[in-house]
Image (cartoon, rainbow, N blue to C red; front, side, top):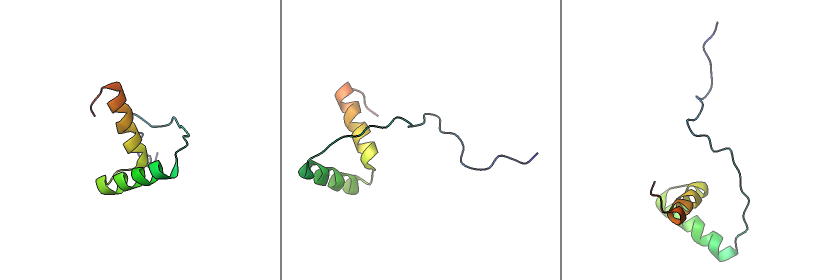
Amino acid sequence: MSPRTGRPKAENPKDIRYSIRLDAETEKELTEYCKKNNITKGEAIRQGIYLLLGRNK
């Protein structure tokens, strides 16, 4: 039997998707924030949700 190949399964997979609408200025600011902090837009939005919920991560 050969060993499994590929990436290991994530401990907490991010498989739920949302679609949001942004105005051009908000999208520009989000893009600049992500470049400055070297994070993805998804991670920036997750951080914003944690702030709203009062959780630090």
